[in-house]
Image 1 (cartoon, each protein chain N blue to C red):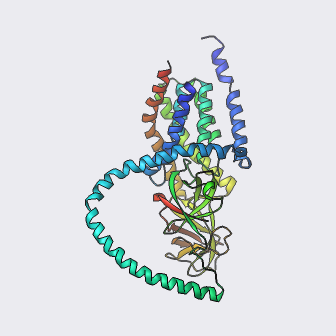
Image 2: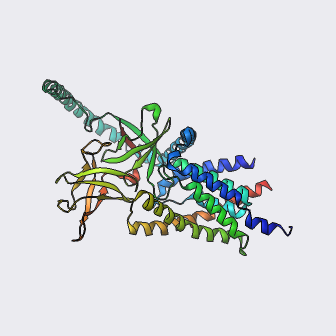
Image 3: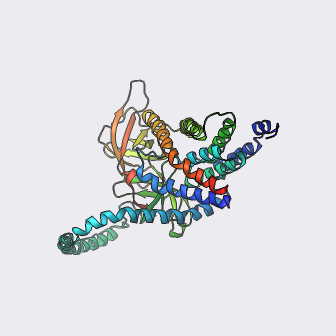
Length: 159
Length: 270
């Protein structure tokens, strides 16, 4: 039951990410709902479930992409990192999620840019690079208050 | 909670390591198609995207349609007049086209469309979820004859090329994607270069040598040296062209001719 519930959730997020969100893109930037979902699940769920969810979410996101298939690795690593740090974190679950999004979002954008530059020799505008980091992170932080209660609700239904 | 738990939790990351290893294997470009599984899974996701795009289009279209209904009657009368006038012009043009065809055949030329290929209209049903990549998904796939590397255009200019095909949909890499590279030339001076993505609405034209004569306002089109794109398709307009004394190449930025952020319908050149 839990598996089906999360599978449906991933599909809905995939459709939202690919069809609806691009209509509201600012400078071509949209929030990464997969990343925010992975972080929230990693904060709320136990390690094995959250890592498996992250790998699945990354895989679906890679299905939507083409040319650079890094989402399975990125999402799995993010989930692993959040699970590692949450054991020593003293604050609330929500504040951990906020910190994780604020830290992970720019790191991922920089990481993907480095992959493009190193493996494909491609360069992008510096000003756009900085704008992308700032707007991308803010967008993901804005998506968090919507996704956090949604996933918490899904978790509570199971108990 | 047992005394063991914190220790076990800290050290047991074998699952993460295993998944990362599998992910690395799948992410390697040679296995990008996942032995055909990717084709099947992409086809499975397509109906959800298609329905969502349809529902979204219908929902957002309702208010606009109500407003347009008011003007429908007067618009209809105007359009009818224009249609009748156009019919007469069309009859004359048909005659000229027939004459042109006869003369061309007589001269041994083969009649071709503007870009030397036939076109297939396709609707945009989705976009890439990646941070840097710029892809669109269209509702035509291998069943309709779409193949990888086919050029895609809009009314105003080049859009990109097909990079992945499933049975009912295809992914199109936009020219603003950093991984895109298009052999290009200035329409005025015929100087050659390679155009690739630079930001969400700007392209960079690279490898244009010091002797070139490219300035702001020049139209950049696909080059005849391109193996993928027919020559002469508008790519964009030069917005800036700079070169320092020590530079080997110009630093040229180009604004795409097609509005790539507002694409709803494109044409695949078959």
